[in-house]
Image 1 (cartoon, rainbow, N blue to C red):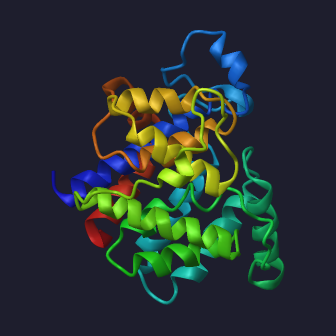
Image 2 (tube, helix red, strand yellow):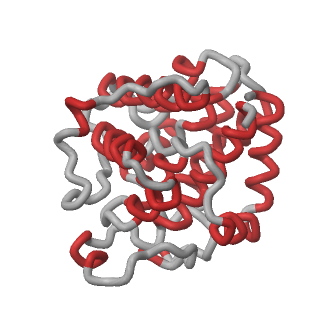
Length: 269
């Protein structure tokens, strides 16, 4: 596969992970363990999402894609992403994290989000793929978009690790093991975390499993907790084409998003 083909699959897998994970979002692991494994794109869940659509993970990723498609990787990009975030908040999305909501309101009021060491959620990591894989200064651009809602050094450090990790995957390089971090993660007992530093390592640990990528995705969305975001982040680490039924469901209802993604990959990746 070419680099662009890999990136296209990564984007599709973000959308799939979100569309699969929205059904089990916020459910408890013990509840999921007592039922048949969830592995179909059927929507529903806590926010009654239409089958094939996503939640804030997809929405905020697309905000960045559209912003880049409008102004490129120019000095205007930060302002354009802010406009997209504000427009999205004003659309009254059903699923939006507290840090993102607060930070976007601060952008509306004063033009920037306050530094806050407590905003350590996964809201900027879930949307990190576009600027992590574009032609520009991936790390600098990725931290810029992250600080729009999660303005602190802890989340910065996770974004840096993420950028390197996905680019090592794209370049067929050996990825970092993170053994000291993932050894503490129990995939059989833990639920998908809302914290950036935990959900990143959860996704890495699942990605390291010696099972097909489709099984990795199914495992992620059956963990309980913030499954849509874990599915989206894991999806951004997978370069393979996943199940056709999953792809077909997303393609059926996200044609405009996929057109924007194709334009982004063609011009900026």
